[in-house]
Amino acid sequence: MRGPCPNDHPCYVGEHGKFVKVHLPVGGRCNIHCRFCESGLEHEGVRVDYPGRAVRTITGDEARTALKRVKEHCGRVDVVGIAGPGDPLANWEDVKETFDVVAETVPEAKRCLSTNGVWLPDLIDEVTELVHSVTITVNALDPEIAADIYDRALTPEGEVLTGKEAARWIVERQEGAMDALKKERYILKKVNFVLVPGVNEDEVERVAERAADAGFHAMNVIPLIPGGDMKDHRPPTCRELSRARDRAEKYITVMRRCMQCRADVIHCRGRPRLIWELLEED
Image (tube, rainbow, N blue to C red; front, side, top):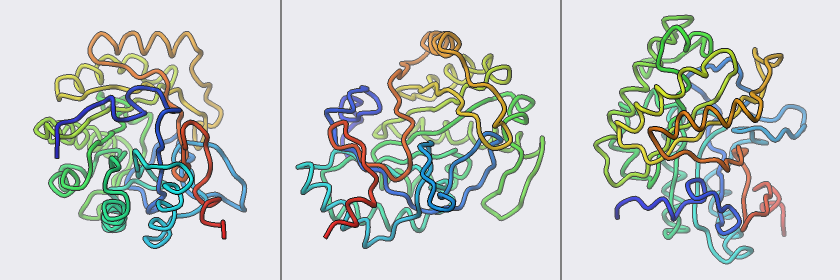
C-alpha cells in the first residue's frame, strides 16, 4: 500500500463533486453512547438526513451489487466508506467481510473507516491491513468534560461502564487509538470533533494538538446537530464554529466542507442518492 495522499479523498480536499463516494451501512451495534446521538436505523420509514443514519444495514451480496451499479452509473468508484449506523469496530466481523467484498469488486477504490476509536487499540493490525484511511471522533480529552458528552461504554471484554467511569475509559482508549495510528505511516488519518456550545469549545485546541502530535493529517470540526438527550441543546453559531476551526488550525489542517453524510448515501460527482435506490432498480 502506497503512502497516504489527501488529494485522493473528497473529505480532505472538499471537492465532493469530483469524486464518486459510496457509504455502505454495516452493523447497527455501538460501543459507546453519546448524549447527542441520533445515529442508527430509521424508525417507521421516516427518513432523517443525520450523520450515521441508515434505512437498514446492507448484506455482502447487496454491497457487491450496489458497487457494480454505482460503477455502471458513475463510471468509477473512488472511495468506499463504512461509518455506521453503529460503530464499525463494534461490528468488526461484518465490516471485515464487507471490505473484502469491496476489495474484490472495486479494488481501485480507497477504503475508509470512521470510528469512535475505543476498540481500535485491539484491532489496529487488522484495520490497517484492510483500509487506506481512518477517522476517529474525539470530542474531549478532559474526562470531566467527556462525562457531559458520553454516558455509557462497552469494553471489548463485554463490561458495561457508565457515568464518569465510562468517560475516563473512552478518553484513555481514544488516546491509545491515536498513539496506535501514529505508527501507521501508510494510513491517512483524520480526527472529527463535534462542537457542543457551552460544553467542549475549550477542548478543540487540545484535541487538535494531540492529533497533530500523533501524525494526523486533518481535523474536522463539526457543528452539533441537536438530538438524543441533547435535543434541546442549541447548535453552535456560524461565528462559534468558525472560531473553533481557527483555533484548531493553529495545530493541524482543518476541513471546512464536511457534508455530515448519512451511512447509506452515495455521492456520484456531487449528486447524493441513497444506496437503496440503486438496489431497487431492475
